[in-house]
Length: 165
Image (cartoon, rainbow, N blue to C red; front, side, top):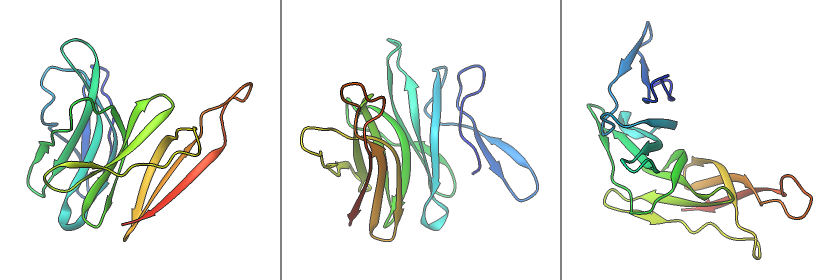
């Protein structure tokens, strides 16, 4: 898998490179809706995970998580009310995604194969975390982001969080 994003029509694009050429791959669960993919990651055994958002019939946006098992792509249901997903990684064979709850607050979710579980990002006092990327290596998961600005600051202090699983 090589690229994610929007077509001019508002449809997501999945491209696969076989070592010689690129080919377009069908995106499941999208139908006629506008949607976009923000991130894609490879997991063990040729599995892939892609995350983004899809526009609901009422024109609101909801989270979109897709899984490739080595043969086909499927949409993975998310808990009701899940915000937009912007980043995905794989830790110990399980995907970990970043959810944008608001412009200035984020959450991390881990998929167990049956359900999504919150990883409970810590708050720094009363300051929430606006996370922008998640990465994993072995049992370690890292989240990068910033604390929202206060007063006249444009962007608050940066933050890197590390958790062992």
